[in-house]
Length: 255
Image (cartoon, rainbow, N blue to C red; front, side, top):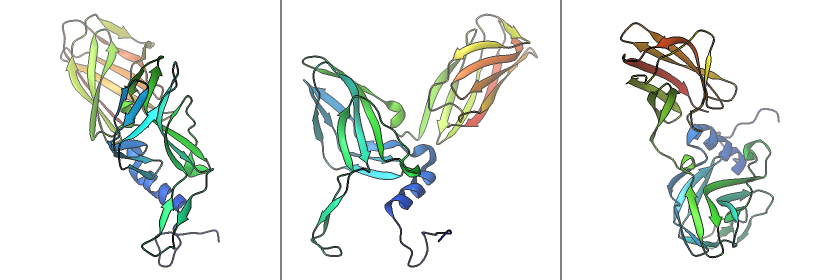
């Protein structure tokens, strides 16, 4: 059968098909912690609170605090690991109250290296990091990976160079850049001036795409920046003199 449908009468819906659908619908909210799952450390023990996450369309529910123990003098990540090389089992009879599945494809663990395959395109293993960590002989320092925790609205300040700064706001997968700023030193180019990597991950345009940020001054001057998918900013044309206010705007869809 070359044409398959899943949301149809008598259709067989597999976990793989379900995950592909949820991942597509979630868009930029996929691969995010939905609630909880914060971590603390005491000695070499790491404690992860209860919570939920959506990982490549698969809902993960941690029902209670879990403890992990780090090895001394190591670096790595606190991860949710989905491992489809493992086989799930069950007890009891399907359709009865005594039936209980045993999920061997899901782990909360410490890993030294991330393995992030596309589970919805034939991949088998995906490690979803919650925190990075560095351990000494007696303790663990944790760093929360904020980009992997869902926020309805996020914001960041983008440095455009020459003292020009603007706030970028992210709502879902959409980025909005709006504000007014005054340069600390005069800027201008007709051939392009590279500013550098100033746009953080999560706010960048999709791979291979470029977007534009425009500036309009109250003195009639204007400027135009290009933002690339690696977060780099380049002033491509225009001029902005000290002592004037420039209104900034731009919008795009984040990767």
